[in-house]
Length: 152
Image (tube, rainbow, N blue to C red; front, side):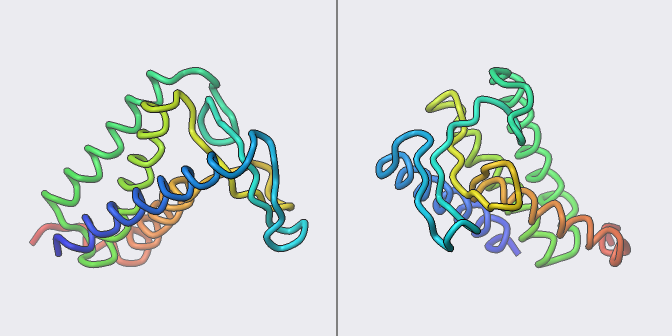
């Protein structure tokens, strides 16, 4: 059970950081390239705040919340191992996403975003996607399989 958690965490961090390096090295800030016409574009954007640009410049707050999120996910996984493989993957996705964005904040002071859907206003990145997917999976597991949370 160790591998799914750490594998998901590592895969998210590696893919997230690789895509951010590629975007920063191939596009100017604010520049877009269409992927699926106007529906999906790669748009280089630096976000100094949280999701949707909330609280710009509150880097210390975001560093702290990232560290708490990562530590909390690791603690829950290590102590309780909720929901077996799906729980390990969900917590690994959340931790990997939080760590990917934390690396950006510590190295650059902002988070590099680049995924831009026409009908979804904020630009986001793979780390954000992993956090949302992991949180959604945790919610599904709790709602429909809550007996898996009990340590036996």
